[in-house]
Amino acid sequence: MRHRLRWIVLALVVLVVAGAVALVVFEKPTLDDDRTAVDGRWAALRKPLVVRYQRLDDALGAFVAAGGGGRTIARDLQADLAAWKRALSRDDPGTQVPIANRLEGEGVRLAANVKAAPRLEGLADLNAKLTAFAGSAPPSPLVHAYNRAARTYESDRTDTLRVPVARVFGFDARPLFALGAAPAP
Image (cartoon, rainbow, N blue to C red; front, side, top):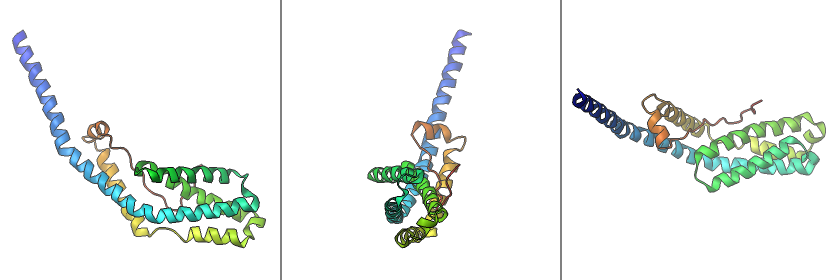
């Protein structure tokens, strides 16, 4: 009886190991391909965003010069623009996308702050820089292509069979990009 139990346990262990190996062999390539596609789409989208956030930095400079430097939006925007510049030095879309999303929301906040203050709204240089930022949105096909790839990757990454593979091999999340998004409350 003990001898038979050992064989059953051994057979179960072999089945579990074989199942895990099969899971890795069949599922990891899909995750690799999906992540590569997302990161490639982000690389294409990141190029116009570098220009866009330089224009946002210019608008922030005009806002600060106009006396808005003490406002929360100015401090938040300065911190996130610095984080964006640091993130660009590392090729990690998982870090860059959330920062880009925050910058988009802060761009909306900055424009709302200017519009709410008649003194600031009347400043031509500040408004010209905000208009330049607003007009520098990346082409929508790039945004849609990135978001489509990110949705596919996230769907595959969170699939029941792929979750263990994704966790073991470090397939981190790739959030969607929200152009011109209002900040979260």
